[in-house]
Amino acid sequence: MSDECRVCLLGLIFLSSLLTGVSGVDETHVFISSGENVRLSCNNALHDCNSTTWNYNRFRNSTAVELIGLGIKKKNTERHERLSLGSDCSLNIRNISTEDYGLYICQQWTGVNRDQQQEPDAHVFLHVLHVSSSQTEISAGLSVTLFCQLFSYTGVSCDDLIRSERIQLFWVNQTGVKLTRSDSRYQISSSSDHCIITLTTTLLNEDDNREWRCEVTQRDQVKTSVTYTVKSSAQSDSTTSVIPVNSTHSQDPSTTNTHTTKAQTNSTTAVIPVNSTHSQDPSTTNTHTTKGVSGVDETHVFISSGENVRLSCNNTLHDCTSTTWNYNRFRDSAAVELIRLGIKKKDTESHERLSLGSDCSLNIRNISTEDYGSYTCRQYVNETDACVFLHVLHGNFIIM
Image (cartoon, rainbow, N blue to C red; front, top):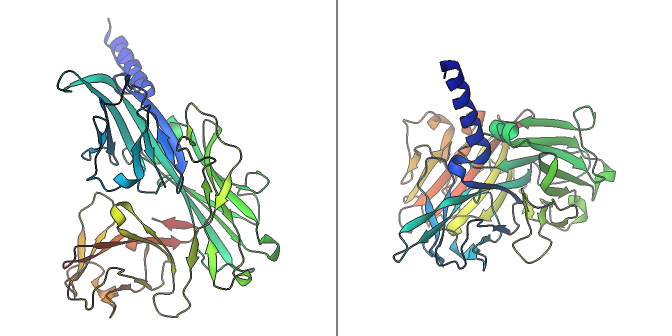
């Protein structure tokens, strides 16, 4: 066989492995909206689940976390309270968050000592769709930007998903018509680096109760969607806005969208109210606070470049001598210590723009696009963390 033929044959083998999964591994892509329940099928399950183990990886090179071991749920994992094993050995996850995306692997261990792995593994890639808003106070005349992001396994880039799985994100109006850049009322921007699409528009009086929906499709089939409903602040006693999220159609976690099931065409809407602030200090920003994995307090802060921001330390004690602020731009990057035990570190690039508030909050002046990332407030007395995710809006894009 000639060298050219060998090269062609190797190329075909490599392409085949990409399309069918490595070593014949069964692969499934599941798409779900944050706040919903999901069931991840174990396609290699045996007659009972005593041999079933579920492992989880968020990153390609990260250490696997065992969620289920030989049919028994591990209680030392961060989210064990939201997990359960189905009678068909599927993994059920309640109240999905953006921290749940990643690769879930179902394995079967047989033999007298359960030490013989039966191949192939079943791989489930969980993609989580989430929508957030740049505004907390909603009224006619205001410009609002809606951010729709698909959180996917970090080992695969968004560009790869677009090419290999034909993934697309787009906005539609309440009649289901796709919004495009040609519509003068809307500014549509997208970033394939982060699988994010934004919708910017100026609200009109007739927009009250109007819906815009972000949809994710795979090979031209809708997999899941999130609906944003405009609720005017003037019609409420308190100044609030809503970030609606699709809810499931039943109480069974099996209500989800995968490669092998048809997408749901009807959806109901749930709302998450977010209180706004009215002061003129750096705390004037848009935030959304949730309880993340292991009960860690998580806050998402949205701010425009050039502004000032105050990141609250929600786990603060009576003084700040135990407070440390760390910063990570990427999930797997080394943390940079900004504040240590109440004292600002002067060897960081941004130290001149930083200050510690009397309530142990971290104040940052003149925000730039380099400031986005995760800020962690840690107390070395009670060992609890408060995580603040800072998203920076610059032009028509959000850096996150």
